[in-house]
Image (cartoon, rainbow, N blue to C red; front, side, top):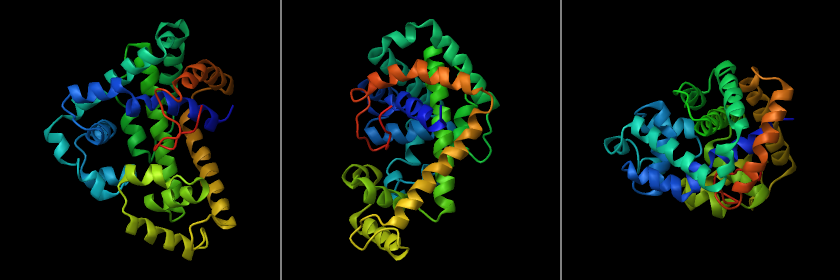
Length: 280
């Protein structure tokens, strides 16, 4: 069992909050009209009434001008607590709809208890968004607890990924350009992160000057090696979250949750998707 393998499962369970009609309806019922207001408010809500600067830093790969359409004005429409309640309610409803058996399994409570122990005993130092999710009140409902545990661990990994990118001098936009050079994902990511064509071209030029892509945007050998290093280092940093569980427990958790995660794709969670989540 690898932390990357388990992440693909937890990421998929978390992602129902972005793509499902149940989640959208819950966000709108809380006063969050429009997809991006719902996304920004519910994802940033664990930080409290966070400023545009703080959210831009922790989200990392969104254009500041794009986030400014929602922040800080969204906090006049909905409080962070209300956004969090809507996020959890929408995600749980989506899971009940798409994988109803998960909410009925006796082992779901075991999975929730294990995730709670993992979240309580993991190392959250330097993980701003991850820790903010980790210290939220733990739900009594096992299905809600599974989703919340998956969310906290997902954001822990994301924080570590940002740390790794920054340590290698790769900004949020450069990360998209580097990924696009490998898999042609620009058409999916660019419009969902708010970067202009001019900004994209400038980032490509910066990567080309470092020898990571060609002038035409193709990935070089050096670029491929850097991407491999970034993913490997992200895996290594994410291991700190799981110190409170044994390898056998993590393998059991993955084996139990993976069939449900697979049923979510590509229905409740599209593939490919702008989040960049792989198939579980």
